[in-house]
Length: 76
Image (cartoon, rainbow, N blue to C red; front, side, top):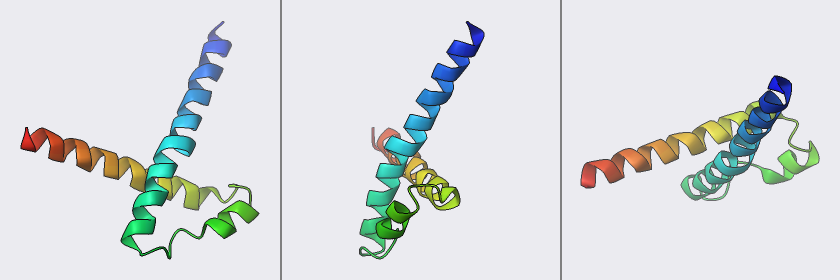
């Protein structure tokens, strides 16, 4: 049972990082760099196996969410 819960937690964490934060990071970086980075064609060719880029993009997405949350809390 512990293994099943651990597997479900790991899957949820992976989906959150790969899905949500990477999407937000991609959108934010595309806007900030005027469409130059990230090169989604290269990421699609490698099948998202080029993990350092994906993890950095997801980290940037997380940073954007944290900054937006702090800004919203400050303006409240």
